[in-house]
Amino acid sequence: MNVLITGATKGIGKAIALNMAANGHHLALCARNGNDLSQLKEEIIHQYPAVHVFIKTTNCAVKEEVYAFADEALGQFKQIDVLVNNVGVFNLSFLLDEEDNTLENDMKINLYCAYYLYKKLAPIMKERKN
Image (cartoon, rainbow, N blue to C red; front, top):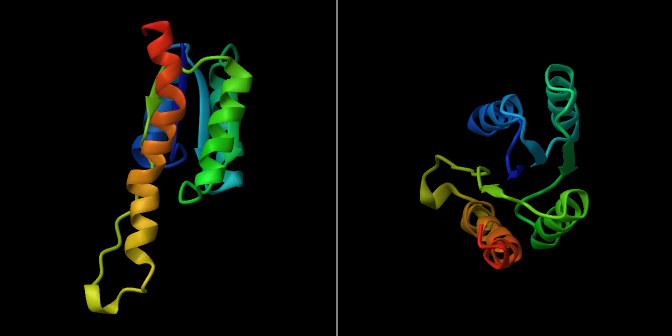
């Protein structure tokens, strides 16, 4: 099984990635920090050498980067079986103190990223009826 996970290097995303790898699933992982991605890939390959891990540094607030990640993951695996939209942000602040683009950025990461990945991958999953 091939699993795509956004926000894969910390917290719940990392835990899901490690769990999926432990169960023998191949992974397409993205996060903003390339060093963290590389370290996670090395950790997974060291523990589970049969697991194929594709990583891509991706800013999930940028539509083009999200689509590029999905396209490259499909190029690596030909199909994605599980989509884990894990990436998310929460800015604890007083509304009047926020920068003007805070809401837009939060929406891009928390909502639009999941929307774009679903739009890209769901038709392929639907076609396979899986």
